[in-house]
Image 1 (cartoon, one colour):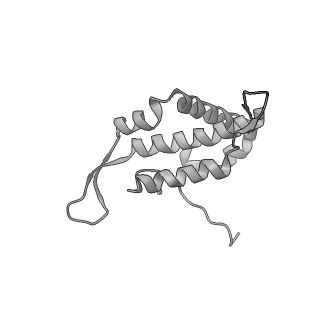
Image 2 (spheres, one colour):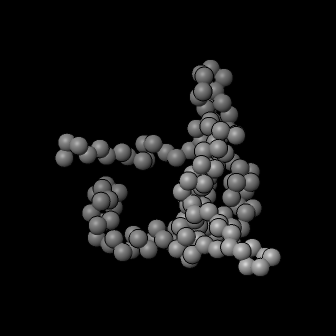
Image 3 (cartoon, rainbow, N blue to C red):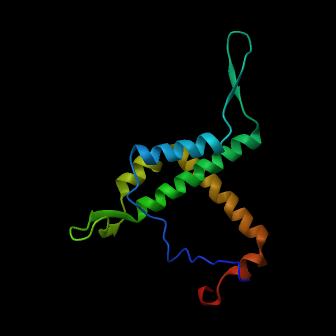
Length: 141
């Protein structure tokens, strides 16, 4: 229809944008604090315990897995050298293994969340079946 907009994600890759540091950390903190279930303390004598339901823990893990996936995409296509002739442009793009390790790979919980997110995505694609096949352009088959 006239209201639909198709965005080709291949033409708009998920990669380093130059947005980093404390500002970027604040964005992710907001995402996790506003979109994830927070631990609630239940008093049991002198020892408080934090309780989340299974569904809440899974949801939090999926948000964490999405965060890990985005971090790895950024590390995979990172600005390795800024342009000396154009402001805010990158001269050389490539993988940044150090960033991938620091942000995700050296954190087992983040890797596990990444696996969980991909498992859910794979399950959704399998369940969608023919609907996914119809959505794939013929030139990509």
